[in-house]
Length: 242
Ligand code: GLP
Image (cartoon, rainbow, N blue to C red):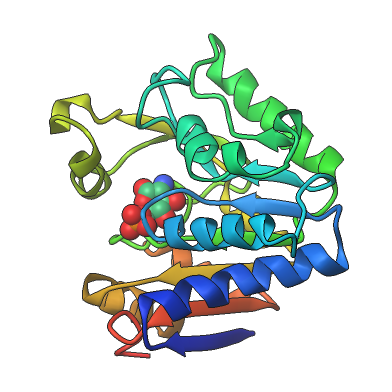
């Protein structure tokens, strides 16, 4: 089931997203949070840091599992998702670093790293709340449109659309990694609740296709239609066609 929340401002977007996460932490301080990168959740993370600083929430017993990571960027590379998460959230709250998990994009044996991440997710039990952004081609995590999708964590080749979209964060397109490690659609759909977030006019069409079009591997986000509990947080521009 999809519950759509359309907000009127950036501030409302961030407050609403953070409130959903905060209320989970207040009722379940040991929650397993599925976290996402990209520009969309940054303001939500900022607001969460505020709530933490105001003493309203604590992450000390929470665990986090990120969706994905580039292959081949050192952990301290400015665009690695590990560094992104540390800088945008973890360094500013009381989560224990050893309880934060980002797939390893640097392992010598990447297949093994994907396998290990799956085991980690299995041991964690369920993800209570999975945050998602939306790629312009309908990707979630780094599950790109394809003839077939994979259930568990796996290695993917990034689409040119994705590399181009993410090139804005690098000096040039040549520096954007060609591969990534990502939780699969199966792992994502196992979450008890999903919070899909999209902002801006450039996401309107793909968001409508994802939520109202056919369920197809050509649009990985369309599989969210089959989940029992999805909250879709959008601004007016992204939600225009819903
Ligand atoms: C990246 C990430 C996704 C993210 C998407 C959208 O490629 N792997 O997890 O949702 O891009 O990014 P943005 O929020 O910057 O539009």
